[in-house]
Image 1 (cartoon, rainbow, N blue to C red):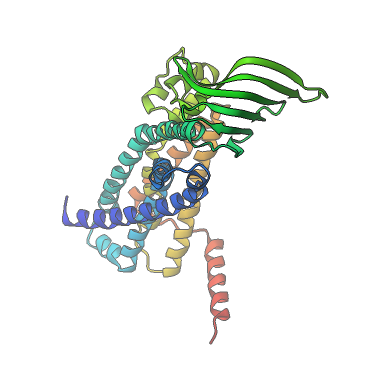
Image 2 (image 1 turned 180 degrees about the horizontal axis):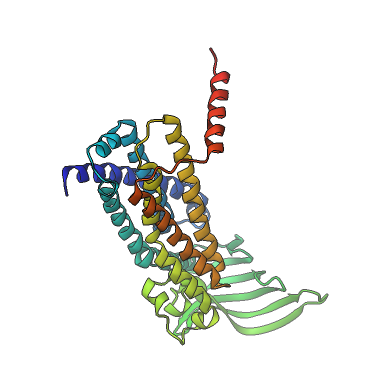
Length: 385
């Protein structure tokens, strides 16, 4: 790698890391503040709070990294243009592809990062997040529920106990289950205890009744019992592979699912949509860099033209990414969305590579330039003398 390549790589990659870390930290902090009830209501430690919320960082990196790369490449190109370095490079006979090479090196490094996060790190984080969340709920249900308080285990499920004995036995149990919109079930029991079996974890209620009120009916159905097992497995146990959602699986599990997998049998098209989204994830940084360099990489002398070109770059790249998001949503219902996804990426590469190879200057539409000029004149009039 020559001195020129190291200079561009160091500038671009340094800006990329700074933007990626800053944006990820801000968005993570915003999300973490919404989960503050882990410490307030569910009485978890700050380490548990940070650990659970930090598991979302790989998913944030997947979305932020390509955009951070665009900002870094645009910043570097704008800096080279402002200092007239690109003009000197072109005047010395350096081809556009030679200037583009260090940017491509940076992009390939970012694409490798995105591929690793998409294929392994993000799914592993989501699996660990689910497992950790269920363990927190297990700790919450078994140990933290306080006598005399009504506690919401999750939306629509409330638990109350009158007393907890030293041997772990729970007295005066009340469970109100409204998770099913068509039925409300209220369970009362004299006492109960947590029992773990090979089939899961259960709260065994003894000497009580279950009152079920179905929608559309006036009178409830009351069933008395001597022993009744309330399933806590969904709160206390880590899921098996068959219970994982599509986004919680590694790339190879999405590409080659087990034909007998119940999730695959239920939603096979979701695996197809997720596979193409994972494969396209490391391609987006390359497409963004090609478009960004095609628009901003040519030498310019007009400061206003550069500003409008930057806006045009943001609009084009934003539109390309929005098409990807939309295609990912629709791909589970229509295979045409997959063709649209790869077609939009192919079109971006064709336009960008053609412009770079020809050394063409992609100018913004005339009406955008006139609009920017008018806006600049208006801003100058509004400024105090």
